[in-house]
Image (cartoon, rainbow, N blue to C red; front, side, top):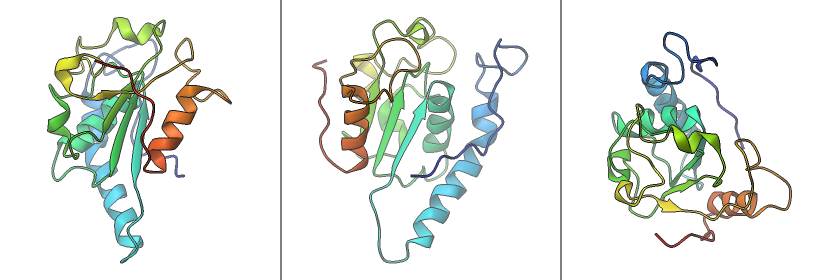
Length: 167
C-alpha cells in the first residue's frame, strides 16, 4: 500500500481554490498519472493488481487524473465519500466497466455536496459506478476495524468482488 499526496490538497474552510473548486485536483492530475505510470514501470513484467482509492476531495483528484490523458492504468478505482470526480460518468475515467466503485455512509455530510460543483454525484445511478456496502457513519469511519466498509475496500484491493448495494 502506498499513500500518495502529491498535490496541494485544499483547506477547510473552502477559501479561494478550496474544496468547492476543481483547481487543486486538476493541478495535481498529471503528477498522479506519472506516479501510477511509474509504479507500473517499476513492476516490469510482473503486473500487480493496482487499486487507486480516494476519500472526500481525494476522489476529485483521482477523478481528474483518471479522466485526463491515458488515465491512471489502474485495475480498480474507489471513491469513498465523494463530492464528485470531475466527470459526468464513470466511463469517462479510463477504467474497465464495472471497476469504478463508490461508497458513502448515509449520514456522511459530504452527501450534501455531492454533484454540485465537482462533477456528477458518483453515488447516483446515472454516474455508472458500482455502489459498495458501507456500515459506518460520518465522514471518517470508512476504515474502522471490522467494518463492512473496510472489508469491501480490502476485497477490491485484492481483486475480489465486494458486497454491493442494488441500484
